[in-house]
Image 1 (tube, rainbow, N blue to C red):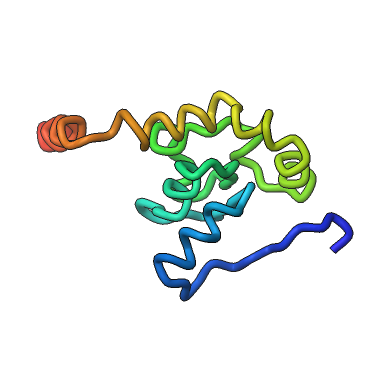
Image 2 (cartoon, helix red, strand yellow; image 1 turned 90 degrees about the horizontal axis):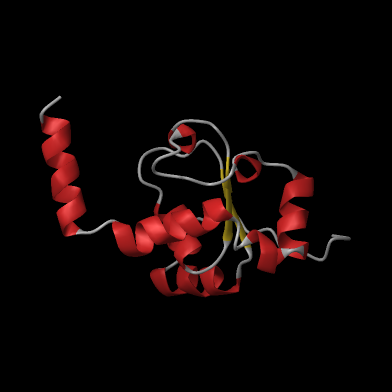
Length: 120
């Protein structure tokens, strides 16, 4: 309360309501992610600072290339990201995450991945 932040548990929101939350948010925290996490990816593309932990999909540094400080969830880290938003959103890991899902993954890259995985 003293930090003047709102914490919202995202569950049961419509697509439009979710978009409005993503446009207003500075930070999204997703712990023990399983599978492809749309909230993390879509929020990142809308400019949030994304935090996760090294649990399940959060361990995957290729799919979630965030810096180690954003792979550790702490109250202090979240407050720092809010207070220093302009710096934190431009962290190399955050930029890499947005570049990956905003530009690098496409139909051709996904076809190459499927072909590579099928040869294993």
